[in-house]
Length: 403
Ligand code: JHZ
Ligand code: SAH
Figure 1 (cartoon, rainbow, N blue to C red):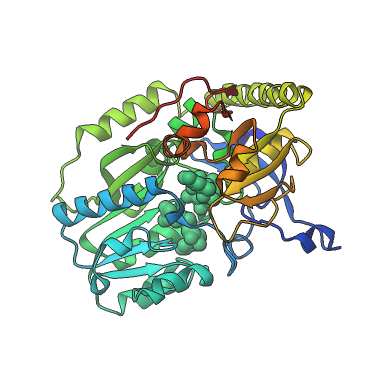
Figure 2 (cartoon, rainbow, N blue to C red):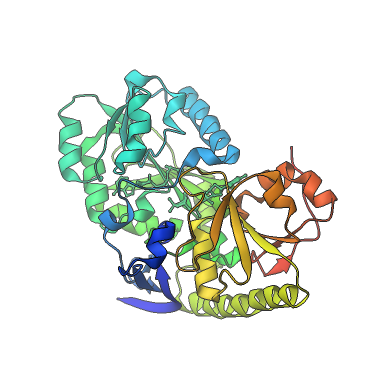
């Protein structure tokens, strides 16, 4: 049984950036009701009203992993680790996007799966075998016939985007060799709760996983987590190392036990925890609106930094629109000169002039704040101020300039 605990209102598709003529067109922007629930059986947290995959991941998909140095570095580090520790024969990446991970591997060793044709073209052009399809059993069968002995399957920020987890894991088990390993990486529910980052819930993020729920889901397929890594990426993610129960080559590490203990201590397996979270979310909305109101009352200018799916979720939930935020800055060519979904805030290309025109900058890409602060050291020194809602709405006073 799934029980609702959070209502984030009517929301547009978070990655549906609009062109000027979309704003005046009769065909209305698509909105869905964003509600989040807790499954008593599996302890999975999921959104309740799901948008069909084809509507979200089409041939105009704008997200590019390579827009952040943090992600490129994280993928590079992982590839070095994987080469050294597992020396894979054939790697299959599900949700390969623009190839930010696989470009660290030899073309002969890689199979990419990326349904959005505009994005899949990027890795195809680089010479990597890329299937522009959604991950399912038909594709798994096709790949199996290639006789490539897929001994490493990697999927970051993608499995949480697929509603039918039964199909996901059955298809994985179909192609993965007996001694193969599966590595998945997604935002951590524990960090999401600690950060009150309710913006991890939106149409694409059907699930926000915990180790508890992953364990529950995969045991049916005779799979188990044998190692886990905590990552700082995307506001705190978990990287799960998974193998078949029958594969005795890898021992379960102490990290798995520790993570489980921490999640249980935090009561991620209890509905009431999420009711408390909901109250924090409502308070967060009230306080963020107040901050914006106070700044606007003084006649100062606010812009956004990083036109993220998360920012779209926050601003639509808080009803903060283009009267409050003049524009967003973003480096992604596919997003600039378009409008944020729902709030219709314009997205300007990132440049110093557009940045320095602001008194306050709302951190849409709060998950990359260290990278952004380092880049904008001068702006901060000259008095530029950032606003964030993580973990509580506030104007940032202390900046960390990490190397
Ligand atoms: P970022 C998307 O979420 C959607 P979003 C998706 N559902 C998901 O799970 C994650 O990605 C992986 C810009 N930027 O990664 C680039 C700058 O302009 O937080 C991006 O548009 N300057 C698949 O959208 C955005 O911010 C910079 O210096 O919430 C970051 O988007 C940096 C660092 C980023 O994902
Ligand atoms: N792995 C990258 C990209 C994450 S974006 C990273 O971590 O940065 C999520 C990607 O998953 C998108 O490129 C999207 O097109 C893809 N995707 C969404 N649904 C999918 C499905 N059912 N099967 C395979 N890929 C999917």
